[in-house]
Amino acid sequence: MPEARLRRVSSQRFLPAFKFIAVALCATAFLLPGAQAAKKEKPAAAKTTVAKKAKGPVPVEVKRNAASSKTARGPVPVVVAKRGGRAEKSERAEKVVRGGRNVVATIHKRNGKTVVAVQRRSVVRVVEAPPRQSFGQMAGLHGTEDVLDLKSSVALVIDQDTHEVLFSKNDHAVLPIASLTKLMTGLLISEAHLSNDELITITQDDVDTEKRSSSRLTVGTTLSRGELLHLALMSSENRAAHALGRTYPGGLTTFVSIMNAKAKMLGMKDTRYVEPTGLSSSNQSSAQDLALLVNAAYSDATVRSLSTSPEYQVEVGNRVLQFNTTNRLVKSPDWEIGVQKTGYISEAGQCLVMQAKVAGRKLIMVFLDSAGKFSRIADAERVRRWVEATHSVGSPAASSRNAAYQVAG
Image (tube, helix red, strand yellow):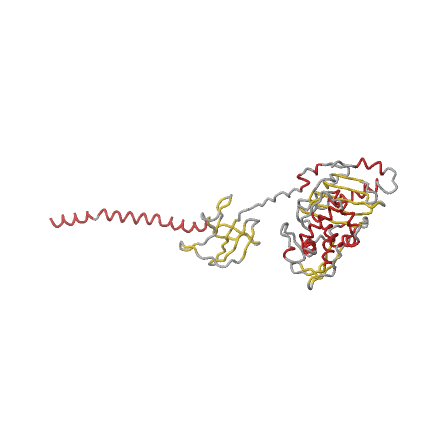
């Protein structure tokens, strides 16, 4: 009896353990099939179409990477492939596809699968600054109205022989004159009677550091003084004009002082020069003064010939460079131009001076601070048609109409 009781007590001690093991086995048998099914469904649900080819969508694996760069729309989707919980290194990209301006997709082959890495780039919009106003615009000169509706804020038309003012608009305003400066430069070089065959080399000193304008005459280019003068007057070549002033006897400083002395001698009271190209806005004058300069330049045969040349070629090393006039009216059959010069910098606007024969009269025309690229040419055309209609030689009403077309300036 004691032996039987001992065995019964011993078996009852292990009964709770047997019950726990039985419950654990049942739970495992019940939950294991569901876990296996969820594991199979999870990769399938993660597959999505990111990039499309011509034949249709390509299944890829996608995961949002919280550490990736963000745009205003949220995190950028980044494609990764994992195996065994560790990210694998991608192979060399086979193709790059652009999905619009800001999305680039790179297609990889990895372990037999096609994986697309999508990158979204931030959009940076550069807003262009409004164009700088010219001195004439800042002074309000463009608000001056005239009967011809010219786009130039300053204009002057004078009969060269009689000095009769046919048209004027703000003609006493002092403004930057840009490359109209080269007309004085060319006149002084011509009057100096220096050797036109003397060779001059373009140096770093001739490079524009103020406006950073371009030039086809690279540093080291060697041309004759005559060739440089031709390019300065016809094609408004800045380095050519600067080299002419730099190599003038006495140097650039002497040349600029002679420019101002010549202006004073011609009666140009509102004119000031600081360099020979016109790139500096400190080179300033008025329409009245420029009319005097045009008249003086017309008296020089060299300036007349070179400034009205339509085109010119120069040999630079093994190349032949073609240069053309900056004034398309030179090539027009409707115009008979004796001397001309154009100019432009932002402070001066579009400028043009000419001596031309219109309706039997020799006229000096000055247009300063024109607003548009071609408006100075359009203004000259308007004046020509107006003169032909109202101021032709022999017209009895010509003198009586003059007062009606004066604009106070």
